[in-house]
Amino acid sequence: MSDTPIPELSVPELSGTIATAAKQVFGDRLPMAERYVAHLAGSGIERGLIGPREVPRLWDRHVLNCAVVAELMAEGAAVADVGSGAGLPGLCLALARPDLRLTLIEPLERRVIWLAEIVADLGLSDQVTILRMRAEQAVDSVDCDVVTARAVSALDKLAGLTIPLLHGSGEVLAIKGRSAEAEIAKAAKAIRKLGGVDTSVLVVGAEVLEEPTTVVRIRVGAAGR
Image (cartoon, rainbow, N blue to C red; front, top):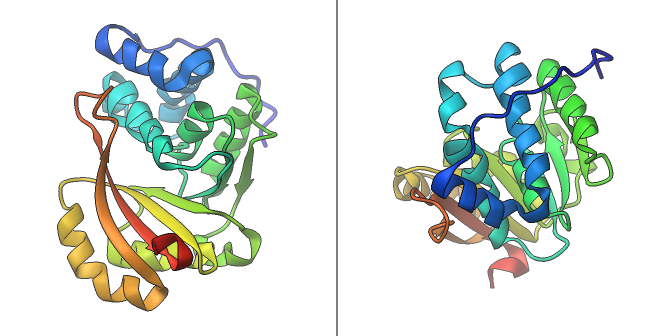
């Protein structure tokens, strides 16, 4: 972890319907979420984790888009986030749901260093663990109920990266776009081979977001029955 002091942060504006949604999703942790967004808009861009053009859309397209997925998770669930990158969705889920236990799996050192700095700054060290490794290497290190992923790979490949982390029981929640149904059709054989027993497309956050989040849910083992 870097010893570089964290500078004063400038928070991207939060107003209107997005402000209302953020208050509903993050509750009394909204100031922590605002600080996280400020990190994304600052060092996140400086270190290449987020593109500068994304700043105006950080709240709705990225942070809230990820955080609403928490509504699909049971109380106290252990969640592994594959390819965490800038903490999307892992840190968003941690901020929205203090009862969740998060393991962020990220192979790239510069991203892991940044994530560690942000977790420490936000005071999330008791809730969030960071593993610097590929998902394939993390199977023996992770015990979780849910695996999440966003913008990692197509579902046919993603299934092989995520389902083994469940050790035969649980569910994968993959944030996807309009191609979700087509990806499911292409990945169906691989999902079944890996133990997936039910795959569906869910839309979450419609009550708070103008553009709700599309999630592919793969249920594995007893969780799918």
